[in-house]
Every structure is written in C-alpha cells, then in structure tokens.
Amino acid sequence: MTETKSLPLRSEVSENQKWDLTYIFKTEAEVEEAFAEAKKMITATKEYEGTLKNGAKAFQTALESTLELFRFVEKIYVYSHLKNDQDTANTEYQALYAKASTLAAQAGEAVAWFQPEVLTLSDAEIDAYFVENKDLELYRHYVKQLTDNRAHVLSSNEEALLAAASEVLDASSNTFSILNNADLKFPVVTGDDGEKVELSGGLYGQLMESTKREVRKEAFEGLYEVYEQFRNTFASTLSSHVKKHNFNAKVHHYDSARHAALSANHIPESVYDTLLEVVHENLPLLHRYVALRKKLLGVDTLHMYDMYTPILGDAPIKYTYEEAKEKTLTALKPLGEDYASILEEAFDTRWIDIVENKGKRGGAYSSGSYDTKPYILLNWHDSLNHLYTLVHELGHSVHSYYTRSNQPYVYGDYSIFLAEIASTTNENILTEHLLETETDPKVRAFVLNHYLDGFKGTIFRQTQFAEFEHFIHTEDAKGVPLTSEYLSDYYAGLNAKYYGDAVEKDPEIAYEWSRIPHFYYNYYVYQYSTGFSAASALADKIVKGEEGALDKYLTYLKSGNSDYPIEVMKRAGVDMTQRDYIDSAMKVFETRLNELEKLVSTF
Image 1 (cartoon, rainbow, N blue to C red):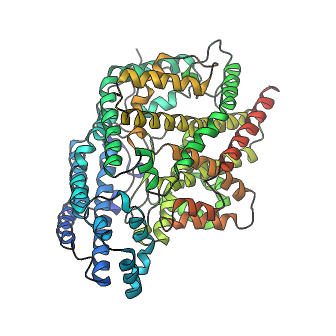
Image 2: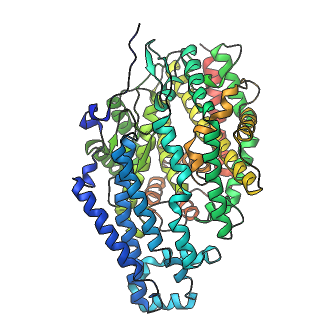
Image 3: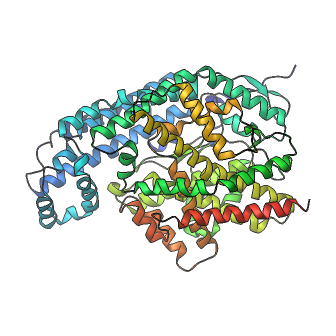
C-alpha cells in the first residue's frame, strides 16, 4: 500500500516560507496592550459626539479622532485575521480573531454617530468650516463622500444600533468560513504521482490541472460529494447573508442591495448591466473555446473536470517558487525600476506566506492595513498557474504599497473596483512577456491555452458568478426562499448557458455555489471581470511603450481613495462607463483563440 501524504503542521513550516507578522506586533503582550489602548480610544472618541456644531476646530478634532481609531483598530484586526488564516484550526487564533472582530464592531458603534451628525450640518455650514480652517482642506473629498449619501444615512441612534448588530449580521459568513476552511473533511484521493493524498481546497485546484483524467474525475467527485452532504447548511448560511445585504439596503433607503453596494463608490449600476450584456453577446466565443478544448483532448464527452487541464498533454513549463520569483522580476520590467525595487522588498522582507499547511485558509489573497506590510497568503504548488497567482497578488500588494506611501490615511486605501485592475494588469503583462520570449510551438500553445483559461475564469466565470449573485439577491428581495434545491437548479442552468452544448451537464457542478467564498462578499465578483477588461487595455499601452502610459498607470496606483474610482480610471486612460474596454478585451480573446486554433493544427 502507498503511504498517504499529509499537509505539514504550521510548526513544521520553515520561517523563511512564512510571512513575518512581528513587524506588526513583536509579542503577545504588545497585542494585549494594543487591545487595551483601543478600548481607551473607543471611550475617548464617543465623547466627541455632539461637538460638530462647535466650530471648524472641533469638527477637525472629532473627524481626526474617528480616523485615528479606525487606523489603530485596523492594525489589530489585520494581525488577528492573518494569524487565524495561517491556521484556522488553532483555537487560540480563533479566539484572537473573534476578539478583534468584537473590537472592530465596538469601534464601529463608537463612531456610528459621526456621519449622521455631519449630515445635520448644512452644506453652507460645512463650506464655512473649510474657509475658516485650512487644515480641513485635506479632508474635503472625504467629507464630500459622506454628504453625497445624505438620503441613505440613518439617525445616529439607528446607525449605532446597526453597528452593534454587525457581529450577529455577520454570523452566517463566519460560520461558512469555519466550516469551509477548518471543519470539512475531504476524502483521500489519488494524486498526480499515483500516491494517495488528502484532498484539500488548495490541492483540488492543482489536481484539476492534472493530465490524468481519472485523477481529475476522482478529485472532482470527491470534493462535491462533501459539499452535497452539507448543501442545506450552506444554503442556510448563504441565504442569511443575502438577507443581511437586502436588509441593510432597505433600511438605508436604497433601491436594492446592488444599488447600495455600487453607490458607495459612485459606480453606476449600468457598469454591471453592460458587463452582463457584453459577456452574453460573446458567449459564442466561450462555446468555441470549449469545443476546441474537447477536440484537442480527444474525448467523446467533455466534463467540467476537463476545463483546467492542459490541452496538449503534460505542461511543458512549470515553476518552483524560486523560479517564479525570478520570472516575476523579469516579466514585470516594463513597470519600471521603482516598481521592481518594491517587488524585491516583498521577497526579501517576508511579505509572503508561501506553503500550504494544515488548517491554513485556502486560496490566495493580499491583505494589510495602513500601518502593516501588504502581506500575501499563498498555498504554493509548482505550476504556471501559481506563477500567475503570485504575479496577481503582488499587483495588489504593490498597489497598496504605492497608495500608502503617497496618500494620507484618510485616502490610504482603494476600492475593490480599482484593486482588481492592478492585479490583472500584472497578469496581462506576464502573458505578453511569455508570448514574446517563448518560441517553442508547444510552449506557446500552452501559454495561449493558459491565457484563454484565465480569461474564461476571470471574465466569463466571474460574470457568471455576478449573474448568480444578482439573481439570489433579487429573488430574496421578492420573498423567494433560497433553498439548496432552488439554488442548485438555477446554478446548473446558468452553468449550462455559459459553457454551451460541448460540455456535459455534470450533476456535481450544481453545488459549486456552496463553496464560493466570494458570494459572502457584497457584489464583489463583477469587479474581477471589469478589472481584467480594463487591465487588458492598460497592459497593452504599457507593453507597447505608449508615451505617458506608465506614468499614468503609476499615478493610478498612487491615487488610493483620493477620488472616485471611475474618475481615477479615466485619468489612467480607461473610461469604464463605456463598453469599449470590454469589447477590446473580447477581441484579444478572439485573436488568441484564432492563434491557438491555427497553431495546434500544425502539430
């Protein structure tokens, strides 16, 4: 019998493969001191309630007190969630994260009065404050954001009540996270090397890229067998979370949860609808690609577990983590020397948590606060896909670094709408580099296939998710119960619409909705699609060396929240209120699909 491979314990992972969180807090004593200090700040900030009418200086003091509180609490919260994510089965870290979540809720409650009280001031009074106190000029855009939503802010008591209830309202999301990352037990399956291996969320993605169909099939069926068992529980957690979004939108007098989510950053809902419209128009391109995949794999029936495997056999290229570092530095040279120096810092000062260990949160992300490093969580496996993941997350982290280095705290973050543009610009530049430097037809075909798969996953798939997300919010708002059967039936039909007749209607895929953490975010996923489309336009300008393109791009990276996202992107050279940038991305997809079809015909 072959020995079953298990993931290492967190304690068994070498220090140089872990992120360095001592930059945030060196000792547990420092963490406890920070919690105590935060509680004092919460008490002090509450005392400013009712002072905003006392003149421009009092207004500034209260405003800066609320910002200082959030800045301090964010640092604690980020540290706690990073510790928890590195080992979600560690009860000490669970308790720390729960404590930080409570602290964040208390901080939100303590300042819930601020925006409603700002809105008791007339525009004339606020304008007079800015004339009287020149130090307030820094906060003009921030205050404008608060007053722009006058119609959707409740009284201070009502906002405080909602802030106090945030832990309760977030309970279903937290339950999903613990169940999905820590408590689900997946079966032992056959790995790509023929050895038995314990299936995990991170390993599943790797096995879906296996060239051995029986490996993919066993992993696919094994994973969804587990999710099917818990389908009713997951339907309950997702339904409750959707109800939270709809409830918050209703009480704040928005037309819908989508209206509420997009209006926070002044994103027109037409941006969402235009995305769905353009993607629907171009579904025949996806169907054509799926049909090509079926042909090249030489299978009578194409299944969903065949959608990620290389279509030309074993991958002709893959990268160890060390090799991926070097390739990243080379590929991203068009972004300039300053950008390269930040990448070096990321690698040299342990921003990145690299390997998968037992209990570690699956997937990958970039996280951090204004006063921490922009940390990256990975679950590394040697492959081209993980090179792209590394480049993607570094796009986020370098964006954070530029923003925090060039903006004050009040504007030292950026919306998700802007975030995905930075990460996918990096991906597009990497693709251009590989296609420029690789001459082997099989390698080129593999890169083209990877790009088309990435496009499928980032634009087509995420738009499919966005369509599902909007559907479940709309149905709940109409009073339709979101049962597991209802969710699964709709999702199965939607999946069939997107992938077309060339792929089999595998019953397991009906439960995919149950394992997607992004459905617990608030109208998040559409921004992957819009971001990738915008990134395609930006990367093209940068790689071609268009005059001023790099400077405009770096200006975008440095802008943070100093202006509305749509305006930031217009200055970067992309108008996202129009459909042109999505149409342009679709043309790139079609061009590379044409090249792949022509290339493989010569093999």
